[in-house]
Image (cartoon, rainbow, N blue to C red; front, side):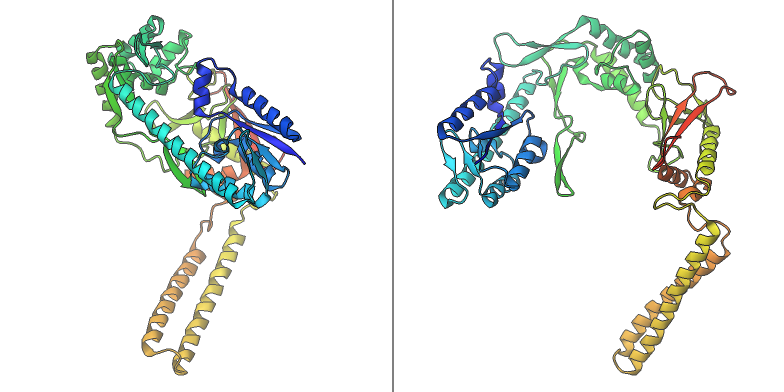
Length: 494
């Protein structure tokens, strides 16, 4: 008979480790191995859950264990307590209970062995799962309430301090506060002063990168990382909580977590010292909001035919399309990474080069599930299909008359069905004439879409044929060469 061990830390274990009580998993493993030795059980594998997750979907080792149990690999599973197996909602608890019951796998703890075929053990096991879930919700409610109280007292409850601050334990009190890190606090003041003087966020980011200063994430500064500093009220002496609340949604049968912006976060006066004055902070917010009043462009419409395809060969980021010096009729393709040595080029020239290369390479070839587009042949097929539908509708009209004559249909029902058939016949006839007289291709898919005037259709056609395009240009000037490397789908790299 073969057995396994499942190890997982609880929230209490993490807190105990912070107080120096040692590695919980190692201690639990020792206890369970002693239990197995005492009962004469042969342990062949140990599942160590090193991540913390409320649901089964967030615990990979638990998923693996359930799969193995379901396949009948183990006669029993050793665990410190049944609550370690499932502390999620009733769905997760049901999955665990059902898996162990149908496979007849024992659950062995140092205190008791649960046999899923025993009615009383099954009931006790399910009750233990229920109580563990109740305990989890109680603990979580207390933690959230404690955090809210700490925020109202002006304490900082986050684990990672904002840029320009360090976290410091409060003396003679529970919790933490923030203390300015004078080296980085000076950079924060510089960001606010430059922004209030009219310098844009991109220009500020470029200036910081030229000084070899790292952003809060330890990377190069970007326009967004500069704005995240400017928007944070912590720099004027306030603390916030629940700016982005965790919201759970069910998508495709799976629980997905997202963090949308909270319209009403908790904002309180903090215990920490501010880095910038209220006047400077409010002035920066007014300037930032003045830009937000500019009418927004409709981003749902694709304007870049190369969107999501062209990658910078220097830094790996996706290239972007930008207007050239405010000229709405002229655009360039540019790398958005500040300080990247990759040089921009005329967008139309790059687009034409890509399309020409794709048309040349795919000439005479058939892509899987995406044949080369033949306008005349496709038009002929569409006309034949519409003609067949027209013939079916005419036959239906004839059958309606027969059903009326035989008394199957009443005059009222015949009139209703006849009206519907006449309308469909008129629409089909109109569509047939429109297609027959059209000089344009009926659809623009595959290589045919490359010749479309619509950027969205062109982008769709390119994505059907290409994995990506590597862009390289390191010399300034219109005459400087641009190196493009195209990677076709289901083909060797070009």
